Image (cartoon, rainbow, N blue to C red; front, side, top):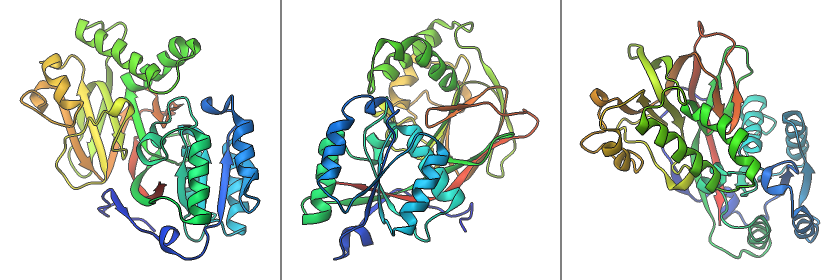
Length: 340
């Protein structure tokens, strides 16, 4: 079992999958409803069909994912390619860690197949899905390429009224509101990749500068980091993540503790907002990113949040059933991701 006090840092290493003389057993999950898969699936299936030893399964729901993973486990798959968006990756991680169909976790190869693909951009394959699959299969069959395995902590999220889930990025307050805005106003314009979320961020930052509280209402949150006393915060932004790169290359963490979870929060109407912003988006506190000005960043093992808001986990939206019980985000284990 995994324990909360384990200190797992991001590491890059060789693994049995990259060093064994045995050809890895590859399974591919395809979510045809993911944003990037709404076109071009024929070319992807053609690439997979060139390698009859590769097992492929289409999935659309978390239950589909569980059934596919159980099948892959029975067939001794040890390298799992995920052709889906951030929500599909979250469903994979949830089923791997919560239901544990594998005796030994497979290494994950994540393709950029979603509308945003924030997880894939950090720990997955870069470039098109077709080129990524060709690269993966050529390495697996002929040894072409220079593989590396990235080990990364995974979030476990327990929210009142919801099943336990596992993922890489948790956000609330303006992040939750921003995703709602993105789906209402931006995605319908056909913007894909990082452009849509980037425009949404700019819209929210501009509103914060103008202090338009009607557009971004402050969210009262009680936050407890590890064993520290609870902090009451009228929050503008709260995020917890194990990703080292967010969309547009942002790295908004500057905590210096040794915990595996990156936590960053901004209170509503922080002081010196424009002056602090360039530094904190690059992971530097700078002269203005201080708690007394409304900027907070720490590394922790467990974070409890009593929320008057919904939250997002890897782009999927949830609402806690009650504020009286905390939503708990903690270290939930370590996953291994292959990059070539």
